[in-house]
Length: 196
Length: 273
Ligand SMILES: C[S@@+](CC[C@H](N)C(=O)[O-])C[C@H]1O[C@@H](n2cnc3c(N)ncnc32)[C@H](O)[C@@H]1O
Image 1 (cartoon, protein in one colour):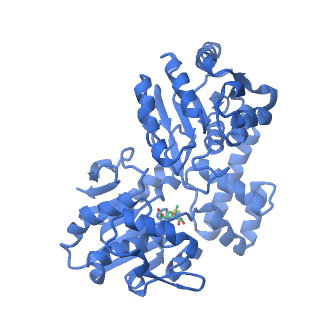
Image 2 (image 1 turned 90 degrees about the vertical axis):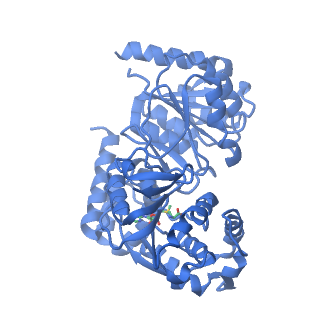
């Protein structure tokens, strides 16, 4: 098994609340970059980096084109642009048509992460009101990465996690919201030991 | 070799074929989003593999024209990101006013929205009569519709709202008339714009400008091509000339960063030193 090199997270309705639980629960050993796509109206999306910066010790940025991914850093997709990760471990943006009626779309980020990092990706689908992310999470799993879904019972909007579970099948790790931080920590640390 | 690397080889060959046959160079475009668009093209042309698409594109020039629609992204708006146009009006126009004749370049102008927005700002600031706007792109279909300057009626509400937020001094309705089932932009604006073919990937500097506006084009390039393009854009500017980028594009990660200062943080308007 290889190391987890990046964590990608997607969600819509209810996902910001979930992040407020997960992000502060991640210890320093979880050093890899974290890249997040949330579907929010532009006015609210602009506030997310500021909110996350206040609740954790990591640097938090709104994603900019060509920014190299740096450890201990969180990148949040900007409204109206798709966010992708390139093979050279830098971000790229696009204003291609919306996918699943969304721009940014979770599927677009996840697919690019699977392509760029193969088994080095952990993908996490949080609470949300549509099916975006399901296909991308499946692609992460197919490329050898780890597919994680917030347990629908702990999501304020279970549609997105349920869609992801259906698409990925039994290979998905379904984790209760309060346990996601610990799960990610174990995953990242265990993989580093195993892969060394 | 894995399936994944076979697909990468196929993509590389497709881009080589397009370059050799049609002289359009997509070889240094940002891969992640390009792959998605080629994926959509495969579905559209009912090709099972990228190799099959390559074979067809070599044999059918007409298919290439259609494929260009997938390879390039034609999404635009008039006064997109109103803050950008507001800043141009407030901070760049006073500088342009000091010139007897004003030259502006809208690079990657798509279907013309950006060039017409610039023309409206210049008109309202009394500069249009002595201004020339070069509007360039690589997509011939887009250039043709840019030249026509006819937009779907449904888009006018958005344009009007953006215009207002961008600090428009009149009413957006003054700039178009309804015809051909759409909104036709005013002749006065068109007169100041020259539309032409130019690629930031293969062509070079063609005139000296006081303002270059290149928005949401560089995001489609990889790092190397982005540096090349920024070189061309920068070399086109006179000393103290301005470079405007898209609202999520930045010079921060570029080797050209030191050649510019940021005029108003956030608006992505840079001034050449
Ligand atoms: C998303 S549009 C941006 C339109 C407009 N500038 C805006 O921001 O609304 C990107 C444009 O870049 C053009 N383009 C792509 N590659 C190019 C190249 N090598 N040289 C010049 N233009 C290019 C595409 O054809 C497309 O019209």
